[in-house]
Every structure is written in C-alpha cells, then in structure tokens.
Length: 216
Image (tube, rainbow, N blue to C red):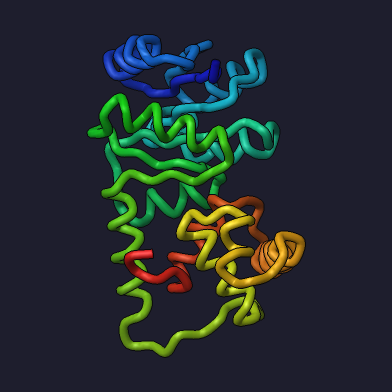
C-alpha cells in the first residue's frame, strides 16, 4: 500500500480527495491537512510515501511546504494537485522538489497512475503541464542561439535531455551506447554544476533552459 497525505485548504475538495483515494487499490490515506503548516506536522508524524499537495493555501503555501518536506524527508515525494498551470506555478513547484504535477481536472486513474509512477522514482506531469513546459521551451528559444548553461558539456546536456523525456538510467545508457556507471557519472556532474537535487528539478531546469526538445 502507498501511504498518502492529502493537503488542500478547501474542505470539500480535501474530503472529496480522501474519499476518492480511499476507493483506489493500493492506496491508503493516512492524513489530511488544510495548509502547509499542518502538512509538515502530519508528514513528520505519519511518514507517508506520497504527499498530494495544493499550491495556494493560507499560512504556508504548497511551494514552501514542498520545499520543507523534501529537505526534512528526502524519501517522501510530493505530487502537486492544483487548479494552476501557469509557468510560474509549475517551475516554482518543481524547483521546490515536486516530482509530479496534476491539475484538478485529472481523473482518478490519472491520479493513481501518477502516484504509482512517482513512488517508483519517475517524474509525472499532466498533459496540460507538459504542453505549458513545451511552450516555455519555444519561448526560450525564440530570438537566441542555443547555449549550454552552467558549464554543461554537450554529453551532459544530452543526458539531461533524456532525463527530461522520462528515460531511466538504463534507457539513457542504451540510447547513448555507454554504461550505466557512465550515465550516473554524467548525472552527478550535471547535478553538481546546476545545483539540482533530483530528477524532477532536472526536468524543470531542462525545459527552462531550452535543453529538452519539444515533443520529446
């Protein structure tokens, strides 16, 4: 069972999500919070695998709560579930450490699939969010020549692009005809150069800097 905490300031939405998730196989809701401060306390007490996080909340918003949860509990993953799909909200959440991002129009199956994928270590995005990220790539690329930021080598940028496409280390190794050990070395190097902590932040970084190809 995947232990989940739901965080949303709207009572109807929060209680609805608890009921919905309770009907899904392999998911156990172990708590619900109305703001980021409550979420931090619940996470520390109940140690879920996944936190389903709203963004706009009183007292402490979802971005700050996500950042603090990821700092205090690196093994606990955060999936954002919000009505907002603008670039600022998306990049703020991913930079804070969220590994998934869904809008509240997502179906139960999408939520369950995202929770399962994120628990297995993948980053997962709502199609609307994916489109916003790709639009950001196009916007970033207009009027400027491609450049590699933060001293990345072409090979590191290539590895980063494949991470943004959702590839595992094994798949990246096969694509580039190198060993998984070499892939891990490239990932460690590019994370050090860019001050990234995990693959979700790497995805946000790749799109923000135009290193991930539209449609990839």
